Length: 152
Image 1: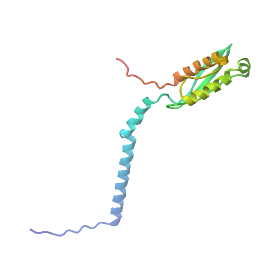
Image 2 (image 1 turned 90 degrees about the vertical axis):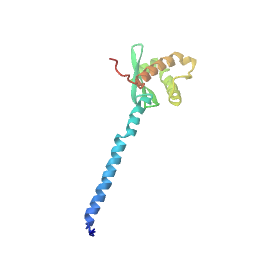
Image 3 (image 1 turned 180 degrees about the vertical axis):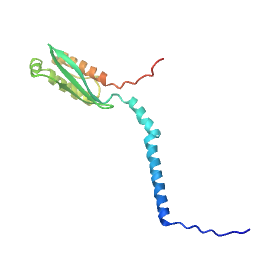
Image 4 (image 1 turned 90 degrees about the horizontal axis):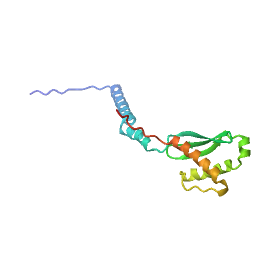
């Protein structure tokens, strides 16, 4: 039995390069794991749990051949704002309760995040109901539609 002593010569430059490449490979592996790993599928499935598709949705109202829109802005889970757009001065003059009614309803809707149990005065009942119907139509457009698999 002869045992020979072997001497291995390592150059410091090669050791440093090897360690640097190992660190980069580990970082790349961690990055790929977080980009494509199991956490990624949970965020895409979380989209189905949201109430709305984020965006701005409009519903039109016509009063005596004057058309204006109710604009509802939503994010994934909440109503951000409700506004009147394309409201002409003549419509404002002919229907003076439209703007204050919507402002009152919009504040309540944004605060409660619901169209239920809203309070409005009796002198604005029909105007408020007209606006609520338009807001409801806009929110139906915003609702997150969970697509069902096609039937064959």
